[in-house]
Image (cartoon, rainbow, N blue to C red; front, side):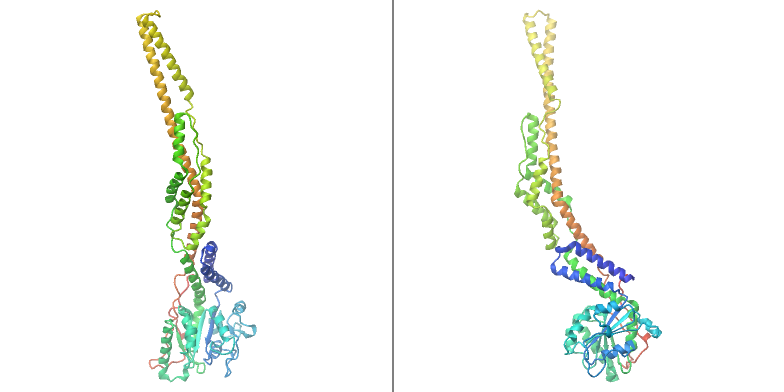
Length: 526
C-alpha cells in the first residue's frame, strides 16, 4: 500500500465511522451523499491509486482518437471519415494489473491494449501505471454516446479535452461539461488540436482565446496545449505532461481526497461546533428543582419535628409532574441548544421521558430512611431525670417535716436536707435540658441527613435518566466532528501549470518530452 493509499484509506474509514455513529441524526440528503462518497472512494481505493486514469474527451472530428494513437504510439483507436464509429470506450494501459480497474470503468475486453511488455522501448517506463481512455464523441447524435461519456467522466483522474480550431467555442461543450467542472482545474487539460491548420501568426491568439473561454467557465490556469497529430506539434509536450502527472500520482489521489473533503464538509455542517454544555453546571440547579417537586425539605422538616417531639410519621408524596416536565424541558433546551435538528430529536428520544423521571424520583426517595426515633440514651436520661425529681421531692418533704419538728432532726440536718433537695431538683433540670438538647441536635442531623440523602438520590436519578444519555450523545457528536475534521484535506490540489513553449513570434513548435514542466501539480498529504 502506498502512502497515498494509506492516507486516503484512513480518511475514508474515519468518514465511515463518523457516518456509522451519526446515523439517522443526519439529514437524509447528507447521509446519502456522504455514504455514496465513502462507498465510491472505497471502491476506487480497492483498485489502488497507483493507476492514473486519463480520458481523452471531445467532439466529432476534433482528432481525439488520433491523439490517443500518438500518445500510445500505436494505431489502435478508431480513426476515419466515418467518425464517430462506436459508442465503446477504448483503453491503452501501461500496466499489467489494470484489468480490475478497466472492468470497473466498463471498458470491454476487446477494446483494450497493454503497453507493458519487454519489447516496449525504455521511454515507455515513464508512463508506467497510466491508463489512457479514448471516449466517444460527446456531441455525437448516435444513441448512447453521450450516456457513455457522462458515465465515464466522473471516474477519471485527469480529463484531457481535445478541441479543434473550428468548434472550440461550442456551447454544448462549455455549458454541458466545462462549466460543471469548475473547481477541478487540477485534473483538467485542454488540447487545441489541428493547430497546423491555423496561420502561424494567429496561433497564440487562438490559444489565448481558448484560455479566456475557460476562465469564463470558472477554470483558471487550466493548461492549454496546442497540438497537431499530423505534424506532431505539441504531442511531446502532452506526453511530457502525462509523464510528470503519472510520476507524481497526485491527480488520482487528489480526486479521492477532494471527494472525501467534500463529504467531510457536509458532515461538519451537521456538527457545526463544539457543544458548550457541561453536566456539572446543570445538575445542582435541576436537583433543586426535583427536590422542590418532591417536597424533600418539607419531609426532612417533618422528620426533625418527629425526632424532637417523639411522634409523627412523615412520608414522601408523589412528585409534581408539571415540575418534572419543566425540569426535563430545561435540560433538553440547554444541552441541545447548539445541536442540529436531527441531533436534538435523537437527544429527546434518548433521555428519559417526564414520566420515567417522575417514577425514578419516587422510587429513589422511597429508598431513603425516615428515622424518627429519639436518641439511644433517651431511656437512661429519662430515668435519671425522673430519679432526680423523685429524690428532690422526697428530700423536700423531709426538709419540711424537719423544719416543722414532725421529723426529729437538728437544725444542721434540716439545712443539709434542704440543700440536697435543691441539688436534686437542679440535677433533674440539668438532665432534662441535656436530654432536650440531644434530641434537638439529633433532629437537626436527621433533617440534614434526609436532605443530603434525598439530593444524592435525585442526582443519581438525573444522571441515569438524563445525564448519561445526554453525555453519550454529545460524546458521539464530538466524535463525529473530530472524525470529519480528520478526514478533511489540507487544501484543494493546485491547478496544473504548463510552461509556455511558443516563440515570441507566436510560432508553436514541437518539443521534446523534457520540454514540459509542471510548476505546481499540488500534492496530497501522505
